[in-house]
Image (cartoon, rainbow, N blue to C red; front, top):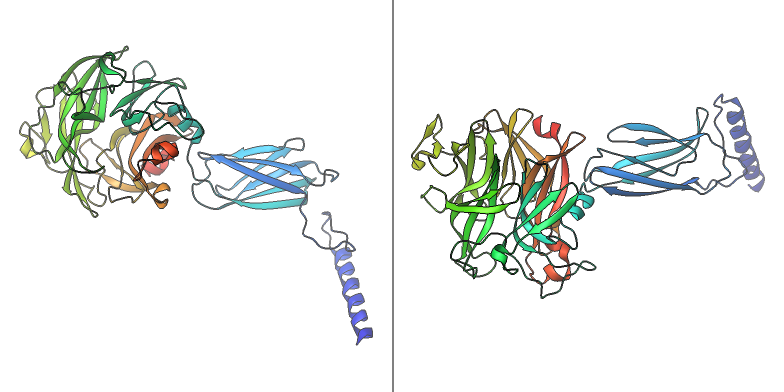
Length: 458
């Protein structure tokens, strides 16, 4: 048996040599006398931010002879050639939360000398822009809300709800830090500053309801718009009508008029709508042609399986205070009770705060599904500001709701921020354990991602 076994090994070896010699492939072959360890000559590392996957690598056998690198990404299918002296590269428009493979090959002539394939998955979150808009010091350092309005001079203003401005160190803040009921962030060419301290009181929010300086009642932001040298912001008047963190209640909406460019408050005016407090006008706003469109979110049933409606009113661009008209399904009525729900939205309960904006000649409604902690963010499109809405697209699903205590809610589009055919979107993150807002500030900071415009429109 030993004799036969030795002859079998010798025969197998000779057959391998014969096949090797008869093959016309000129690529480099492994020495048959070397043990087959499956060794690669390339060690690859990856990092990512937003839609970009970054690669770095080093040669574990620097003596190997080759001409250049070839890098292949599985999705979107992409191949690039990189010079021999390089050790980094990147791919953009990589799909979120989806495994992709990257193959890095050493190429000599037309043959592959050696290759390594790795798997990668990115979350799509833009941590760079998050760190700019919500830094660790010098501006608002945590909060929710995150409506934004582009200003005529190129700046943007972000309208925040409950906020902190204290300095963050190593992801923590002092428990003595004050929470402000609302603040504004002014973004100016990559720099941010905070507006708060109404009336010169450093402990006051950016906007304070007349007659309620002690925060018995307070403002949380709706949306707004610009007309000429005036900025109009819808602020919802809130009060604590129940127990605990969910005991807040809505009373009405005020329009705050600011002068531009200095952002000085000019006047505060209640909206003319006097109907049910279940109807919250100002939750989305759109200036289009000669009208301002002011959207309301309505909770028909506000439980673990909510049902909502969206209504819309309009005003003349030059006068947002008077002569509101309400969409009645076929036209416009001066009677608010004639307002009817916009069609096409019933499959997704619309969040308390949402967006309507114009993109490529269409109207887009973006909302996070209001079902508790679903994490699903949707868009719809329409040919007019009143709908009917169609083309429902699930554009993103948040991650944080899978972490104990964390909630995600009220996604917002920021279409004035665009790159490579994508627009910026944010969503809020919060914790059910209040102390975590101090021990880990990431539990109360918004997240940002980019969504492909074609995904919304198609």
